[in-house]
Structures are given as C-alpha cells and as structure tokens.
Image (cartoon, rainbow, N blue to C red; front, side):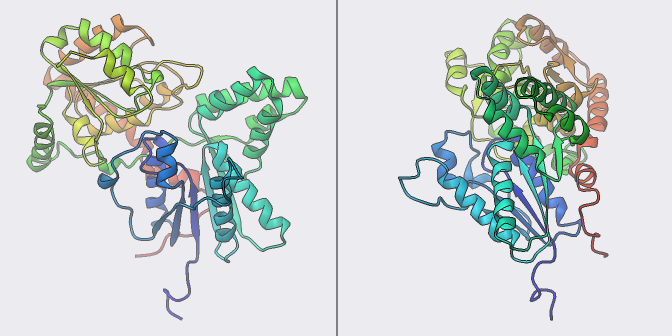
Length: 432
C-alpha cells in the first residue's frame, strides 16, 4: 500500500473564526496549522464559518482576493447550515458540529483545538459527546483556548443579568476539554476571578479547577513573515515600493494597524496626533476595519493628514509596520472587551521600524515586556508626548529599540508556541 493510498495517519482540527476575519485567532490558527505539518500531522483541517455568514454577522473581513494561501495538507472547511427557517439560530453551529462528528469517527487519530469558547468549544464538546453516546469509536484529544472576551463578553454579562446557568454552562464546556489554555496570565487570572463569582452564587468549584488545570499558551505568530525586512537592499526596496504605492514614505507616518473598535483607542490617537508636534511633519495612518470605523472616520473628517486604509493585505501589513516612524495601539479597557494579549504588537516588534507606543491594559505587558513606550489608557495628552518622543529618536536609538523588541517578540514564534502547547500530544516529526 502506498503512503498516499493508506490515507491520513494523524489529524489536527482547529475550530476557529478563520480568515478572512480580522482577528488574532485567525492568524494564530494559520500559524499552528502550518507548524503542525512539520510535527507529524499529515492532515490539518480548519473548520470555520461560511463567508456569507461572516459577512452577514458584520465582522471585519480582509480582502478575499489578497489572502495568503495555505500550504498543501491544510484544508479549510466551511460547513453549511443544517435545517431551514424554522431553526432561527444554531443552524450553522449544527452544521459545524455534524462535520466534526464525521472527522472524529473516520478512524484517524485526532487532536482538536477550539479557539473561543462560545461557540467553538461548544461544537467540539457536543460533537464528542454525540460520538460517545452513539457508541462510535474515536481517538480524539481536545484543547480549548480561552480569550478575555469569552469572559468579558459572555460570563460578565451573564452575571450582571443574573443568568447564572449560561455562565456555568460555559465553564463546564471549557473544563470538559483535555487541555485548557488561556492566551495570557492576565486572561487566566480573569477567568479564575469570574469563576469565583459563579462559585459564590452557585456553590460550584470552577475557580479551583481553573487554577489547577488552565495553562498559559501565548498566541502563535509567524515570525518569518515579519523579520529580515531590513536585511537586504531588495527587502528595503520592497518596503519603499509598498509605501510609495500608498503615497507614503519611510519614517514619515505614525501607524495604527488593528481592528478598529472602541477599545483599541483610535479616537484617543486622533486627538493625540492633532495636538502633537509630529502632526506638522508626519501623517497618521489608520489601517483596518471594524465596528468603530465609521465613527473614527467622522472624528478625522476634513483632516487630510489622516489616512484610512481598509484593504491592507497580509503581505502588505509587515511592510507598513516596518516603514513607520512609530506604531501606536492605545488600547483601553471597555465593558465588552479588554486587550488580553496584543498579537499586532508582537507582529510590529518583529517587523522592526519605529518604536511601539501602547498602554498597560490587560495582557499587553506580557506581549511587549519593557520594549514599548507605555502611556496611561485614555490619556491623549500623554499619548501626544509619546508620539513626539518616538519620532524624535535618532537612527541609532531607533535601531536599539527595534533590536530589543524583536528579540523579545521571538518567544512568540509559532514553532516555539506549538511545541509548548502540543507537548505530549504530537506524533514524532518525520525524518529528513
């Protein structure tokens, strides 16, 4: 029997809001999937949502025609809905759960990872429960990765409304997985604190189990896509060409590149930029889409120094990061969202260029260490001073900041993160 005819021998399934969604998890899923092919997995599936469903949900999306392809061996599946209009909600979730049942029961040993507890971990746990209840054989190990919005957007809302059953259901689903991870120590602490509130109300013991079982696994970033942009004249020329195509030039702009949402602080950045000395010499580039884009554009109306880019591709992103005089992500805590890590900050530190300006909100300190200019959240005056400080750096000082930042950010490279996360779960890597 040939290698091809015998079928896959080990499978990784990742359930996630994948590309084209503008989301750190989409980036992380891609990175883990690529590394899995070098770590003994010969079949990698990313199970996600249909494009039309993502559009209808109003999620910020990347341009479809500019997405980078996945390597051979990675299959993106977008199961369709099950049922008709009489199932007003849950049709897509049932389709996803059904596809997982099929993948779990075809005889291939599988590791299945979910990113976001609601609804992705629900689909995984429900699929495995169905498999076992039906008496079907399945060799499946599960990993559930929790982010802060699982708590701020779900559990806190449940507690505020007295919906304790939903909060308990989320923790039960999370802890039903074989390996439970959080994207930062801040996130783990947040999960434990909210679990304690549920325990207090219901007499459960979720906080104790969270403390004992949840591990920290930082998001995985493809460092190779961001490093070495200054390594050769050809790479520098590629950066300069990309900037010229946007009407920009190296070190001539302050960059915000992230999801445009209220918690990301673009409104504070616009106010700070306008009051800074840098506004006389540098432009402000706000790159990204999101729910606050219209409001942010309204704040900048009539100011031709502020440029909005809503169609930045995966290939262009590191070039814009490398060419900026400073990168600002002034995140601030909001009831619906707290920055629990900051993948874009790590990407920027890997890319080089001007220094990072950010806040100490949530898990950001874990992402940047002492390699960023830190300002208080929601403080445009301090932010303006930081911008002026950053753009006034001389070449040697900028280079020193960039080198330190890149060395710190390399700890989040996808290979290192994968190996730590999948310890004991992976087959031996192929030889040769």
